[in-house]
Structure formats: C-alpha cells, structure tokens
Length: 183
Image 1 (cartoon, rainbow, N blue to C red):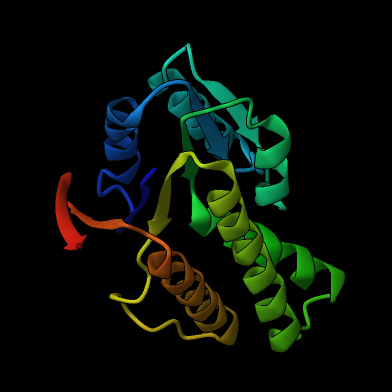
Image 2: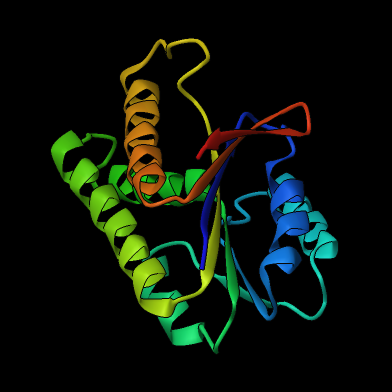
C-alpha cells in the first residue's frame, strides 16, 4: 500500500501521470472523479478525461463525502485515484457560499473541508489500497485580489498539507515531468 500525492499547476500533467502510475501499483483500479459539469466546456473536459481512462477501471463520480462513498463502492480495488482534491475543495466552497447567500463563514468552511479530508484519510487507512491523489498547487502564483480567492487558496493549501502528511510519495509536476518531493 502506497499513498501518493501528485501536485502541480494547471495542465502540468498531473492526471496523465496518475493514469500511468496506477496500473504499476495494481489492479483493479477505482477512479474517483470530483468534477461537476457546470457548463458545456466543463462537460467536454469531463468526457475527454473519461476517454483517457482504462475501460476496465471502475468509476465513482462523487462531489462530497468521498471517503464514505469510496468505502461503499470500494469493491476490493487495489488502487484508488482521486482526481482531484482541488475540485473537491471547490465543491464544498461553492456549496457553503451558495447557502450563505454570498456571505462566508470562513471558520465553518475550514471545518467542513478539514472534515472532508479527514474522512478521506480515514478511508485511505481503512481500505488497505494504494491511493493516488491529484491536486493543484495554488500557492506559487499571484495572490488573489479578493477575499474569496485568497480563502480558497488557503483552504486548498491546508487540504494539501493534510494529505501530504499521509503520503508516502509526493510528486511535483512541471511541464509533464514528475519531480519527486517525498521521500
């Protein structure tokens, strides 16, 4: 069992690397997709991602509570790919902003994201499978000019740090190249 975190910027090759790495760790594979098709362009991106995955893999589309959903759909998978943590955090972020009518309760939002990542970590520990988690690194760019952008960056950074603590291996993706960070 290995837990691997793949982190990098947009279009850095994170998902491609995860797809290449998974069969080397074992079969069967469960692919956990966290994206929501909010518009036509995103729907097309999701369809393209589906075409790149092995037809033999199981897929779980889950936007929240992925740890408990993985446990239900697990089915003895040797490898679980979670693509991606960035969208998972965004799903939670958007849900609570919508419910609050644009007002943000930052401590509540932080707690909900911490709970979500803790549930995923518990799932990683209890399944015995190898996990490959894909996420964006958003702390190396410009600082957002608005509070919501900065809060998202901060909360994703916290989620990434929580997962990094439980990862045996971490790769930073740059221009399609995996740079080993941990161990």
